[in-house]
Image 1 (cartoon, rainbow, N blue to C red):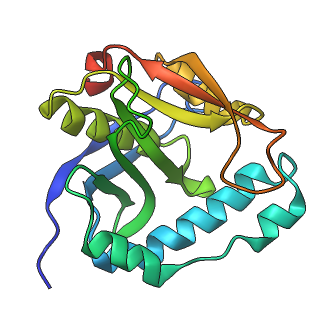
Image 2 (image 1 turned 180 degrees about the vertical axis):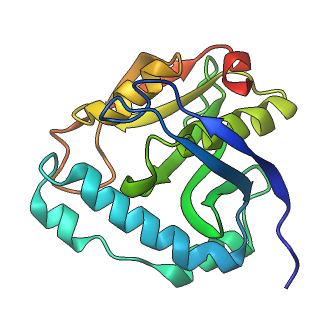
Length: 201
């Protein structure tokens, strides 16, 4: 097994209001490229965070049917698309968050880059992990000449929306939630950054 490439490891201090309670935390945040060995942790984070975030916002049936799919995640990490970026963030030796990014999926000319997914375990939110993940996604995309990006979020997810707004994102698109049958009445909002340079600091 090869050692993963460490992309960035530093001490990140979140700004006041960086957590839902408005408190300020400092953490040793390490961001690196995801490997096949991270599949189980990523799936655990995806399910735990999704359930915690969307319970009460989406039907319970949708929440309860979500299950980890470690084998599928392993395969995606084993053979990722050349354009796809996969990162995890660690606190100590524990993987506590992840993000996937790449070209915008609908070929949006105004926002050619997209963060497809970003999740941080609830107990580790507000400590700089989400900010660090977005920074690395933006940096890698910028290295490929993509300096305008968007991220989709459920309209009712006010914590997520507030986080993106504090990072300078603005609502630029809307669409029905199409990922889950029976949830089409819910709406997703895309937050966009026309210039990602402020995210790199």
